[in-house]
Each structure stands twice: as C-alpha cells, then as structure tokens.
Length: 517
Image 1 (cartoon, one colour):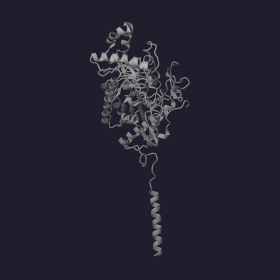
Image 2: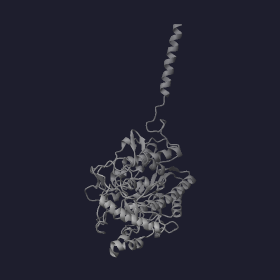
Image 3: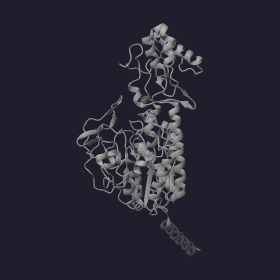
Image 4: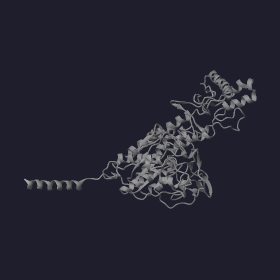
C-alpha cells in the first residue's frame, strides 16, 4: 500500500511537470494573447500613401517628431514584429517646422500652446525644398495632396512650386521631376500598403469658408482651383486607378474613408452665438435696423434674416448670447430694397452703404439639419473693428458681417457632406472589390466629437486644446490622436487578414507638443 502511494505520488509530479512544460505563455504583443501573427498579410515591404494625415502633420506644420508619430510609422513598428521591413521617412530637417524655397520661407513654423493661446515656436525653418533626398521612401504622405494629385506627373517638379502646379513636400523626395506619387509607390513593389486620401478634396473648400467652387459635373481636374470640391466621378476614377496600381503585384492593403469635416475643432470650437449682451442703446439701434430689413424680406416673400438681439442686463449668469452677423452669398440681394426703404431716414448715401452692407447678410443659425459653422481663425476677429466701415457699422460679427472666408454656411456644409458621402461610397465599393481592409474614419471621428473615445483611463475628444484628439491647428490629430488612428487601422487589418496586432496604450502619447522638442 505504501509502495503504491509512493508510485502515484511520483506519477503526479511527473504529470504536473509535463503540464508546466506545455503551458503556453500569453504573447504581450498580441491582441488575444496568442502568438503574434501577420495572418494572411505580408508586411515585409509596407508603403503608405496619403496626404498630411499620413505624413504626420500636426500643429500646422510637418516636423521630425510629428513624422515619427505618424500612424503609418506607428503601424510599421508593429509590423516589424512579424517580419516587416525598414520603414523610411523623408524627414524634415528640424522640429521647428516650415519650409524654405530657394532660401525664402514658404511655410511657417509649428504652433505650441503658451498657456493662453496657440503661437508659433521661435526659430527659422531649415528644410530647403530644393535639397532633394535620396529615396525611395515608405511614407509617401504629402501635405496638401488631393486624390488626383497622386497620379499627376510633375507633382514633384520644383519649377512648378511657384506656379502652384507642384507640391513642395513631394519635390523633396520624388524620384524625378516628371514622376507621380503612385508610380514611385508601385516601383517599390510593396507587399502591403495603406491609402488614406480624399480629405483635401472637400476639406480645402470647407476650411476656406466655401470660397472655392463645387466642381460636380466637371471631369477635368486640371481646371480646378485650390479650394474646389472634386467631382465624385473624378474621385471614383482616380481612386480606382490608385488601388489597381497598388494591388497590381498582389499586395494587400488597408484604406480609410473620409471624415465629416464638421467633426473637427476647426469648425466646432467657435459657437454661432458668442456675442454677449450688448449695451442697451446698441441693441436697440440694431434691432430697429434689422427689424426693418426683416419687414422688407416679408414684403417680397423672403424669410426673416435677423433675430432680436438681447441687451446686457448686468448679470453674466442670466444674459443670453447673441448670434454672429455673417455674410451669405446665396441670399437674394436686398441691397436695392434696403437702400430705397432707408433713404428717407438715413439719406441716400448712408442708405446705399447700409444696403450694400446688409443686402446679403443674416444672423448665424444653429438648428438641426441647417447649421452654420464658424471657422477657428475667426475667433481672433470677432468683436474687433474694421476700417472697411464707419462706426457704428464696423464691429465685426455684430454690426459688420463676418466675411465668407470665416464661415461655412449651412448650404456650403450640405455641399461638403454630399461630396463626402459620394467619395466614401466609392471607397467602400472599390475596397470591397479588392478585399481590402477598410477603416471607417468617418464614424471614428464622429465618436470623438460626440463624447469621445475612452481607453486606458483616458477619454479622447475633439475639444480644442484639452480634448487630446486634435492638434492646435484644429484639423490634424495630436500625438494621442494619431495613436488612436493607428489603433483603428490595426483593428481593420486584424479583422480582414487574421492578424492579431495589439493596439497602442493612449498613455504612451502626449496630448500636445511642447515649445521645445
């Protein structure tokens, strides 16, 4: 009996030892604890194409630390764990940011927050555009590029920069002055690619306050202006060309769709009603004037354009805010009727001036489905006086209309949204036809703008300066924002190709870059 017990004890020890030998240790680099795998993808030669978002642009500039924190570089670091090769970046010369062309600055330095406002860092740019780097480079993100620019020959020709026909960032690393971005990417024979392009095809129009043209129906992008919206058919054709080229040698890849531009702080930081209660006399004078214009509108069957302004009641806790006075070029021009109606009271000269000032003006609105957006730079001019008009018609946003380049009106917003939807439909269709991973950046940034995304004890939102999602230019991500984007791209890759990359911890990234780097 004792002998049998000893034998069982030895067997139990041996069995435990065998189990310990076979125990699988969770892989800390994988999302599921299983051994890290690339799945069906091959990351040995990864190339990324896109615009400023791909390059790592932040705080209104491109600089070394921003390039290191770009989402493609963050992904490449993960890819290296499963056989990913070198990921070369066309680094800028410094962390000051900005560009020189023939020794002359053509792009300013980056922004930093000085405790009360964003300001430019001290220093002079040292990156000379005409000093061409030796490539090829894996990160081919080009600030300012639109979809059709990636297939435009000569987009990297220095001679075209002063004419607006070439991009200074691409000039720095193009393989030749006559090549195009897609050709330089395909020449590298990538095994895997990322493509996030199309934002600027609507963003330039939006950030200019709709000063460009909606080119819907114009199939010749060579005739487009810098701030125009790209025709959806042109976009679809170009996007198909890009994807066909990148997959021509069997490469797999991941693409991102286009966010709603109104989800970023450049459009949401300044409210439509930031004007505090006015002095009683000023409120009374403006209400009389605007009330007269509303009566003219009613007489010709037009909707009222102005609200009743509130006066300062001496109590900051109870005084309501007043809406901004903005220009809207889509309105019926009432300059003539206003001048005619007010001439007996103000005299013909003043009445004519008032008519020209308010003939296409109205108060900004913030109603569901029909909202105006006040652009971030407008915060520096609201409430200031302009030399363009005499007192009392010279207070910007109060008695002098905010100009077209400071606002994105509701009708302009609708044009942007329509184009964005069309572009995203094309992206989804083309991606599906090639079996590519798709990142829904539109939904992602909408979530960031509506309450934020929580992870690792942090909540990333679109609140300007403090939200953690965006840099000081109000359009491009912050370091943490780029970490969030990298994670979303990795998730899409995992879901499509069976890899199991673990995302980054939000705590690994700062919110904003400091003055000194």
